[in-house]
Image (cartoon, rainbow over all chains, first blue to last red; front, side, top):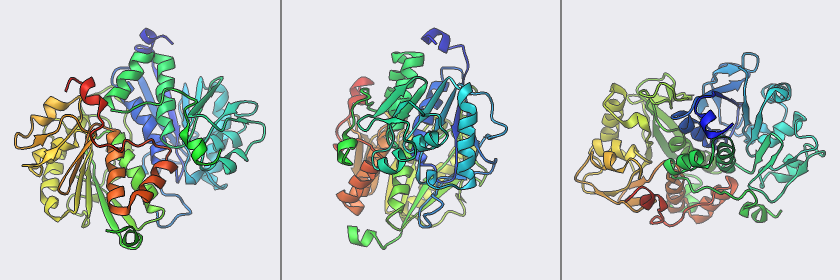
Length: 220
Length: 220
């Protein structure tokens, strides 16, 4: 899609929500999409098991604070999408019904997507859905062993802010979601659109996907 | 509060929500507080006019995408707070009932607070509430003229990622909210706690409050 096409064609973005998603994994990328929507035709669906508000509070962490976000669709009523964003968070661990439903949804919708973007341990959900098979991908560096252990047929890249393989854009932990989203916006809408968004949000981008001080920090 | 005290004493954080708040203004800082709560005793209230979900969609921008967040309290039922965080966003403009109620709430609660943190054009709401009178403060650099024009008795600092004056911590636009929050966490809980949060969210902090490439970019 060229920059001029981008101004007219509608881009359909969806975000998977589940209990214990990490707030910044979602709202870093989503804030970029929101600002993009001020000048470009974009729709954004928040998709979960039910329409009940979904909390960022990790189910297994009683003392944690959490905020509740209202889904716009369920996994069964979700619209057609161009891009699906899969966040991570402590809630990705384990096999609750909500997580199993999210994994099934990712598996089912992936063949229809133009782009899949994973943030942090969201790559673990994509891996469990089988959609990273044979692909290069990265994930959160602090949760590296637990996440990469979920799928052996993935070429996990330990030193990367984000990795692109085909239509899968996977990023490192939490705030790296902002960088992969801006890189994706640059690819689809052009560098000027991405630059305007990072300048208006006063965000100093990591523009080099191999820039990753956190890999060494976490012993990778 | 020393670091050892921080582990036992409960810290009460509140965040003002209004239609058209900027998502990252809230969830950048709030994600830091969420991670802090995994190891420290923290409560977090989302406070608005009513308990109805509040959308990030700017009321005057029909084409924009938006996400709805569920408040935990209204301005009349809000709990006692140690810290109030005031986000910005396109929704701060104008004089809707929701904005006027937010401004009244900021004015009323300020004398009880230990800390006030503003992000982006949230400084404009604090200025309109009169609580920045005689203080040094900063705000979003792209919306500089409109925001600083709201209060003449404020010493607006054009070249700053964030400014601390007394108990008021004001930050520049959007993503600067993460830096001011981590700086505040460092002040209250110690540098090791702040470093653990930025490392676990893989966020490269701006640790120098005078570091501000966006001031020059926006002609200040």
